[in-house]
Image (tube, rainbow, N blue to C red; front, side, top):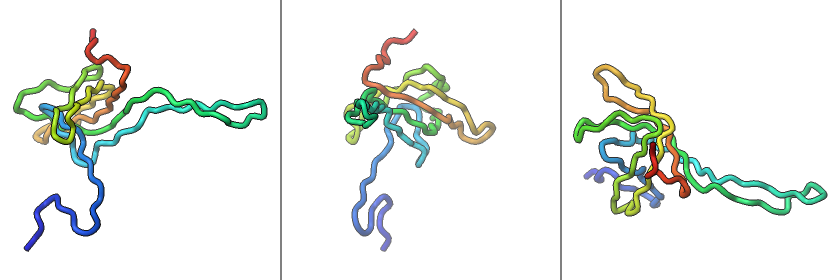
Length: 129
């Protein structure tokens, strides 16, 4: 008897799913977040680092998104804001600013966007012009 899909056999390991977006699907294995927290060392008179300051919380992510035909959605564009869908795993969905959205896979193949997005606490994604 075979085990159902998505089960683990052996020692349990941590798994984490990428966010979900309405009208778009994250291509498996392409969600790659990068923490944008910057650090700045402070040196004393002997040029020894005695202190670090951390600032700029946020994330940058690269991924590929497949565009669904239903519900009909528009092509993704830089400067567009996209919001995650609330799920049990992600009850507080975040908002992402699109920096890059290059379409790939033309012809009869599914349309995929090669994406780069950022998310910052200080970024007010509701203000667009």
